[in-house]
Length: 364
Image 1 (tube, rainbow, N blue to C red):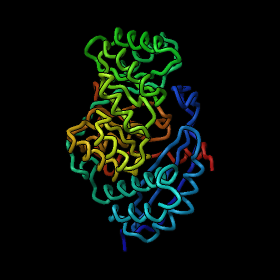
Image 2 (cartoon, rainbow, N blue to C red):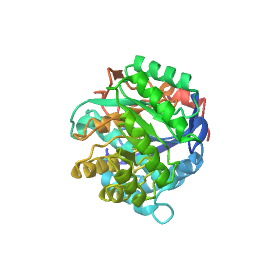
Image 3 (tube, rainbow, N blue to C red):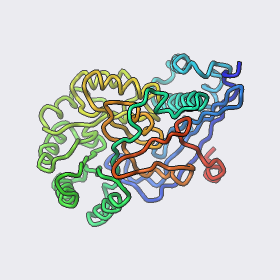
Image 4 (cartoon, rainbow, N blue to C red):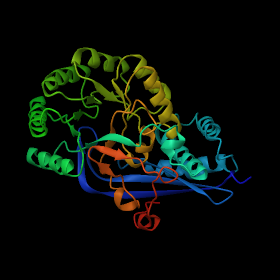
């Protein structure tokens, strides 16, 4: 059978970051770990997927891909992506409904969709239904510890690169420092440029409410991840009492996690990450779930892939774009045009790795 899965090849790499990144909970980040998967069918066509971590657990993902998932999928019908997803989910369910298992599953699912789109000769965003290849995007700075002058200089550089919306980190030891930095950013951007702030889960519910109230004067689009992702009731309190919209979801791992958060009224902008929520299949289900609740959907990470997904969503809000160091290892990085990311028209999801360059940073 030509569309049967003939081989699955995984890779594990340590990607040095072009600049040191900092946020409130992950601390200092100097490199990321990248896991790739290449799925080939009987005709030799190939689909590529990937996932990443902020420096730990990549080896566990590599082991899951190599020792568990490849064996389960060998010979399966590559076109029946939902069947493959369910097969992997239940084969590995007992040992891991989240963590490395769901990240590995996300990469495999992404590769299967890439393969399906390539076999159809279609860009992924078109195959998924197609809405608008131009997606509003923002520059997501991971910049909590940057001195204020460097933060503002970074922002001016991002505006010069074509971005028309900016996200900055908050969560410094004193709220007054955060407020000072948010005010300076708003003064730099003026009243009309969208500004988002991201706390990376660092506050209690009461601290988040207090911070949200202080940020209201600066017209933030959203406060992102104000508290731990597991506290659904707390998110609802922050939404109700903080007075600013909330974005959350990059640390949720299943469709059902998003169902609980959305149904509770605890989020304004659901924010799945295609590399850790279950892949393209689950990302699109989350986007449709958000649409059913009349909510806009945004994204976290993997902007080169995610632009394809948001381009298929009528309720897309903003694509997050930030430098995870992959640009030097892919042949055609994301294009930004006057505040919009443009989903490419080439078949598949459009991301092609420079495998020779990646070989120089192998971690396995």
